[in-house]
Image 1 (tube, rainbow, N blue to C red):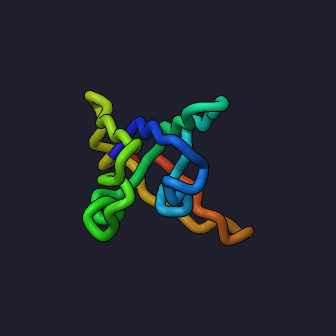
Image 2 (cartoon, rainbow, N blue to C red; image 1 turned 90 degrees about the horizontal axis):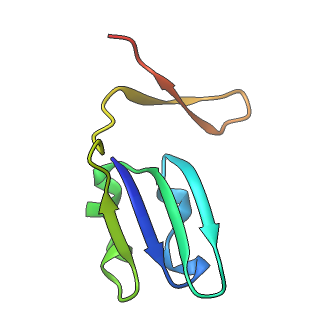
Length: 83
């Protein structure tokens, strides 16, 4: 799912749970991530239910046209699947 997450501090959101981070910004008060995260990563954990964390789904949040792919460096990379 494509989500926008707003939170108070860098350690409030486990960024490693995101399959892809599209945008990351922060200032003295808030941090923001726009990224792709599998719904199971939200069901398995409750970090998004903590005070000060907001998760907003984009209108086009379902990203079933994408699949993770291991790169040579071992990092996850997203490639669009042509069906």
